[in-house]
Image 1 (cartoon, rainbow, N blue to C red):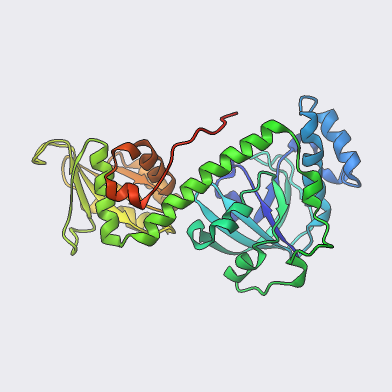
Image 2 (image 1 turned 180 degrees about the vertical axis):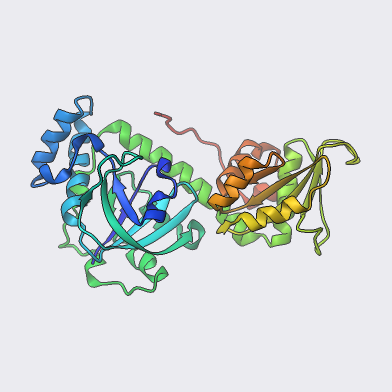
Length: 341
């Protein structure tokens, strides 16, 4: 049994979890079994099918395709960090390679998965998150295999423990293309900062202190904000408004959850039930929201859901205005990273 990491585009949404698979793209190649007898065959197929691909990227991409078809075995473990909801999903491979005709997301090369659990990124060490942030699509996880296996109550097999005689196929396949390597480093820098901010807010603030933090962010955005009493006000933790006294609409009622997991439609409906005429609901958490909650948001003009990623964006946008207290909690230094998109 080996432990693999895999990245998929945010465009696939929750489909891999709902339909129990992991996948890679390259849909124009067709069924990879036609080429996957050797890496050289895959290199030739890539160059013929994608003539614009950079030469430095051919070897790395061919290696990914070859491993996906030939190296992954049934009962191997897959770690899939989902960009959509900041969850780390862990599952077991239960099928050989298969090709799905006309996959709607352009990910036809698939493996069936038995999902064993989904966990917030804050449950893992920063070094483990860094390992699964590798910029190649498919890679073996070795240094932190035990950490991921322990989350789903699996013992660490000897095969996952790196040793000097262990040949790492990934190392020979990583593309030397400078643009891709630079883009990867930039993305990892951004992701590491996001993880740091969310972990600090989750671990260093109580639920009540988090409400004051959200109120402060709203003040940095130009609102007047006050925190409700600890007993709460029908699920409302913060009340924000534009005028000094709070008499003029719109009035924003805010519910704050320090959770790094997922909030659902019932939570959002509770906030909607606390709204009166001329009032709007804002739900803020450190994690994500279920699909029904997001659908409710789209159908209710009075409701806005802010997840962990969006809260981090607000922190970064208004960081110069944060009080000394919160800048000490979140010590950040501005840097510039390459943007090759």
